[in-house]
Length: 148
Image 1: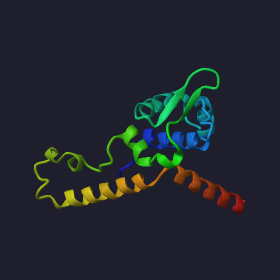
Image 2: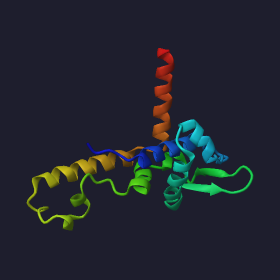
Image 3: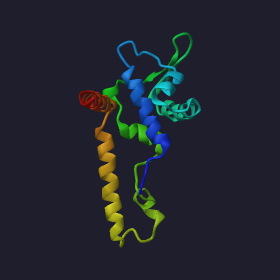
């Protein structure tokens, strides 16, 4: 089974949390707040935020009222960008990204399925934005509330 690492999963939750606090004022959020809300170690968030900042997905604000905010609107940030920053490319196997990795690429039928599956996965993440995730979360919370 192929799985995302905690870095990719928690980083997406971090970005979703920042998206929920994003508004016209671009409110900055401290990582301690995200840590408490998402139940993720502050130390781990401090590591995760670095590649997100380097990839210009978040920006830091210094001083009183400082913290982190999204660098762009939630509707403009794709999940694929977050995962790229934290996990690297979206390939299921090395030979899809680097055809020189294996001498059998030209004759290997399984290479074709890995390539197509990688493309489908990337395309799905590329079509999903933080705004989409916020909408999905609202629906799930409303549904859970209705059941309670």
